[in-house]
Image (cartoon, rainbow, N blue to C red; front, side, top):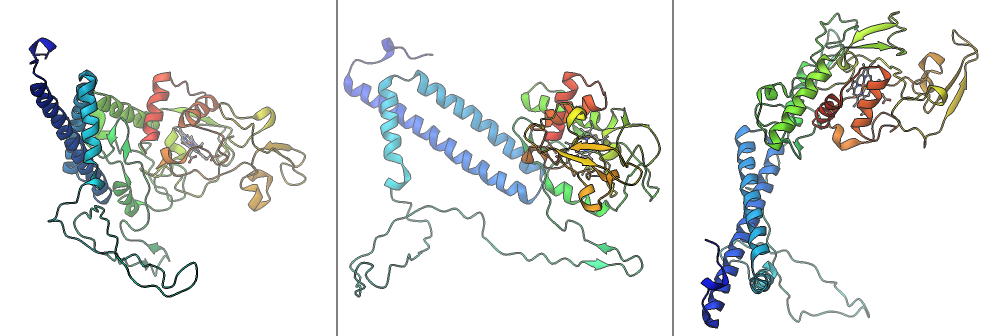
Length: 405
Ligand code: HEC
């Protein structure tokens, strides 16, 4: 039942009690919000250490609880009378931690802040007159200990390959999406922990369609989000996850003709190769090219050959005349000579390596010359460059997927 002024007593003392009780209620709710936020922060921190479905689930539940409380709290304050709002504000001020002594039962650790040994103004000797003690609250999750990770790095006597153990190295990958939330929730394998487990399966040439190892090529390079393929909920989170898995499918399965790529079409003597995004981005769940194969997909082109959808207006333009070799007499205009700077060969102009596609969200702008400000620009470039014909929905899905890597 809504409380209207008719239901309230006229006695000022009774009214004061009601206001005080309501303000107390609000404070309790605020304290609960603060406690939940703190707990959520701990879960978030813990989740970097280990990928656990249970942890992710609990954190999600906490987030929902928080959302409900915060909405509730905002509504209370919005509908409260100005007197109540003022009372809450005064009480909140009074509750600020620094103004209240911290609970006696908590363990205390003294940190002495050294004072100067001599008087800073005259250099004279000092003597102690008093101590100023202030207290701050610190939280140590569990207790700290230092773990030394000792991993043997071995070298194979027969083929001279260095063998790195599972999980050695540093791995960066997106772990949380504002809408899709935990990227390892519901059977998905986003985040750096799952990525670190890919390492053991890697070898130079793995899954390369044209590689010297004769490895079998599977265009399904990414299967991080395949378990989200069965989702059909209508919540914002579920819809975002569905977009991500649709994007993964598009990356793996959209067929288009790869043409005019120096290092690929010319090297294989095939003017048109029917392929996928994964033809070049072929390392499973990492997306880099698994063989050293510098390619020129046209990103560095300038002048009349400027790439579609990319902004190269702020970049320098190199004009390179080729004076000898098979390309003698030709002129190239590029924003970056690419591998030609290393080899001095005209054939290598504009060629760069196919990068790892993990952790993309954190490192805009894209392409080696930064000409794509966003992942949407990257997708638009490919769409026009290879005449793919993505619909707006497909472009958005692909961007959702790339952002979740
Ligand atoms: C013909 C080979 C090839 C194909 C096909 C290809 N890429 Fe690339 N991709 C590359 C190369 C080479 C680069 C590096 C270009 C550069 O930095 O200038 C690259 C760069 C990228 C980047 C930028 C990463 C970064 O760190 O800046 C993204 C994202 C990307 N590709 C996504 C895709 C998607 C999505 C598709 C399919 C629509 C695709 N690629 C198809 C070769 C390819």
